[in-house]
Amino acid sequence: MTWYIVIAALAGGLIGYFIFYLRYQHKDTVNQLRSNLKDAAKEIQYLSGELDEYVQQNALLKQKTTELLEKNDDLSDVVAELSKYYVHLKKAAEKTTELSKYLHTPNPDIEEKMQPFLEKAKEKVNEETNKTFF
Image 1 (cartoon, rainbow, N blue to C red):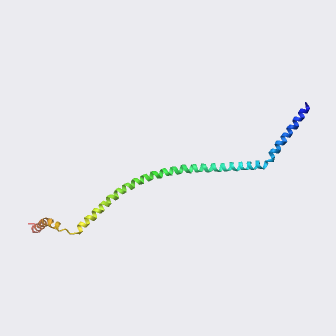
Image 2 (cartoon, rainbow, N blue to C red; image 1 turned 135 degrees about the vertical axis):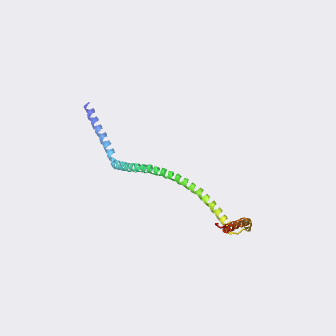
Image 3 (cartoon, one colour; image 1 turned 180 degrees about the horizontal axis):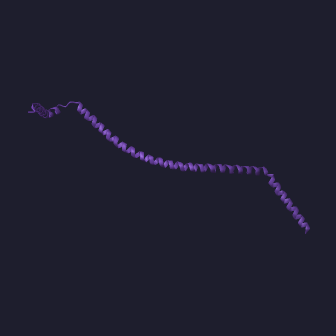
């Protein structure tokens, strides 16, 4: 029975050495993988910090965008009102130029139609000048 214990101890030692040998046979690969894992962890930490910053910037940009959209709606209303006034002013300008054109060209029909009124006005002026105070 003692031989079994000795043989089991030797077999366990050989198996342990074999595992040790196999493990340290690829120690460069294991070290490379560990360093890659550390670099990846640092990169993840950096990227999570960047993500937090971008999330905050995104929230701020959304807030500013909604404010600008509200201002844009207000300005659209103002532009619509100004467009209405512009149309009215344009129509008034057209009517004014048309009236100006009519006023600058003499029309003999108007003079003939105004003749009775002009005669009445002359008579009134003559009557007022002929009146005396006493």
